[in-house]
Image (cartoon, rainbow, N blue to C red; front, side, top):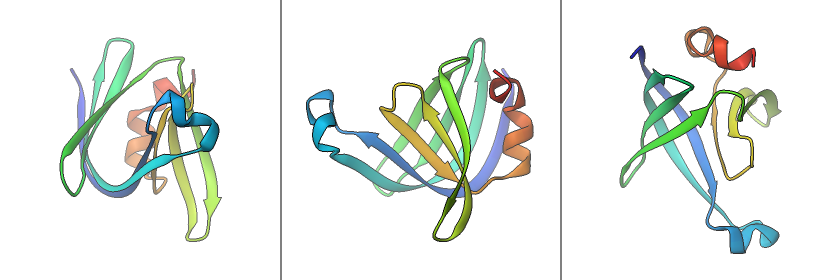
Length: 105
């Protein structure tokens, strides 16, 4: 299993539950992306949040990558295809190179 150690600040967002989707109730928390591990068919983002550690798995072919423009400049959004959860981080070259095989689809 390949891994990339990082120390990148970002924001993790997930919809609290399907029943709230129509009302756009979101759970947003600042995170530090500490590590990315590749597994067969996907990768895991290992993040430290203020009150817990979070590990989110993303599958190849079911993950959307977008460079977006925000109030503080450009950021990379790594989003699960169904829109249930995503992570926004600065567009870090080492992360983008590490995840290149998943970004190409």
